[in-house]
Structures are given as structure tokens and as C-alpha cells.
Length: 341
Image (cartoon, rainbow, N blue to C red; front, top):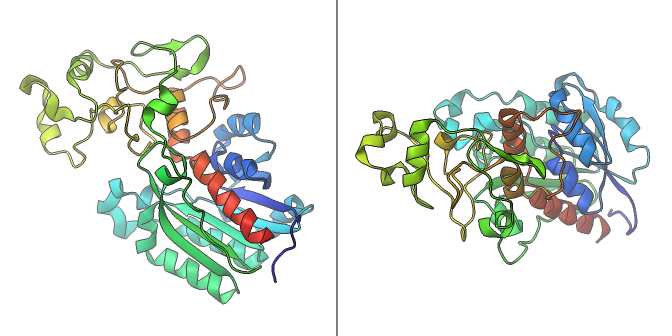
């Protein structure tokens, strides 16, 4: 039986990080009452940008009864989350048979304990190949959930990068559908084109998060030879090391292109050596603010402040781990439409 139109949807965001999923769901009209994460360093950014409570905790130690107080005003209870996904990443494919699936199973345990009305899960595509995901889906079916899942391109939902994600929606209220593509795609120029120019290793006075890590002298020379959309193969022979020729990921040490989507923003986008994370024109890597914009966080999303000393490495990790906000908002709209259909 479906929920009637006008009923409130309240979510708890597991593995919330700095709030990408929370911010997107909130933008779709879903009330996110709390976000839970084991990393207390996420608290300041999460609470500075979201009207939600940050709970520092380990999901493995939670019971669904611990979450019930955050659903007090809910007509429809949504349990949402993205378990840490690096073990399933394509960049870790050599370890794919040895991944730790325990957090996916903890997510499943909480669903079984509390039977929330709806469930949303977002993760890397590689998770679909693992037994833990099949077990997760089988459990949902046994508990009476109708579900749908697929591998979605974030580019189809307003996110300016080549990021693909597994998205699953499940409901005990009736049929549920994945979000429809948004239409016109967003490119790097659309989100980075208007930012102040900054030098390598420096930042902008108007935005403390518009800052980069400094390049080594050798990498500055390499950056000057790097082409938009290119790789280290564009350099003079004297700048190429043996490790580059053996590299699994040949797009390292490259620049982005203005009129193309960015590569997947990883937790190490602040480093020139870990991907095509060079600025299209300026001789530097992309800044923390630029990485956040490419993850579709809004321009005014607070990433640093007096209470939160800026750490480029840590912020890059938080941003790379986040659910892209525009994808989360599309997921939220699909949930709202399903509940109120």
C-alpha cells in the first residue's frame, strides 16, 4: 500500500561523511534528521551546511532502536547510506577477492532489525560483482521490499564528471523507480570557469578552500608540458620515469579539458600524480573548492572555518568519498515521487 501524498519522509544517513547525500536528499524535499559517521572530523562541515545532527559512531555498534528517536516525526522512514567503497574500486581490482564486506552486511542488519519503509544505497559499480550485494538484495526480497538497482552515470544527473555509481532503491510501500536522467550535461567549464585564478601551492583570499598543494620542481616542469586531456606521454623523454611506463592508470599527470567532464574525483585529487587532476589552463592541480564543485557541492558549501583548520589532504579525502550532491538530489526526487505516486 502506497503512502498518501503529503506524508513526510524522514531519513537517517549512514556513513554520512561531510554531507553529500544529506544535502542532496534535503534539496529534494526529504528531511534528514541525522547523519552517522565513524570519522568525527566530518562533524564541522556536515553540521555547518545541513540542518541535521551529526552523530559520531560506528555503525557496527548501532541497533535500529538507536535510530528510532530520529524518526519521531516520520510518516515514511528512509534509511540511506553509502558504505565506504574503496575496497571495491577499480583501482583496487587486484584485491577484489579479499574485500571487507562487513559494512554492507551491517547495513543489511539494521534494515532487518527495523524494517524502514524505504532504503537507498549508493556505491561503486564493482560492488555488484560481490556476494555481499547478492546477499543484500536477497534479504530485501525476503523482507517484502520491492527494489530496483542499476549502474548510473553521474554525468546524466548534472554532475560534471565521468563517475559511475551503483544505485539501489527499495520500498515496502509499493513500486519504486530509479531517477530519470536530467537532460543537458554539465562540463568542467560550467563549474570552474568563473573561479579566481590562483598559483600553484597558493589559495584565494575570498575562499580558504580554493587552495592547492604545491608541486615539486620536477612536477612543475611536467605540468608545463601537460596538455588538456593528455597524459605523461606528452612530456619530453627526460621527464618520464620507468614507473610511468609501468603504470596501470596512464592518465596520471594529466590536465582536465574545459569542454569535457572531469575524470572521477577520487580521494587523492589534490595530487598531480594520481589522475588527470591538472587544471585545464593554470599550471597547478585543481583546488579543494574545484574538487567540491566537480562533486556538485554548491559554491557556498562551507569547507573550512575558524573552528575547522584547513587540511588539503583531509578535505580531498572527504570530498572524494562523498556522494555527488546532484546525484543524491535525483535519488531523493525519485523517492519522493515513489512515495507520493
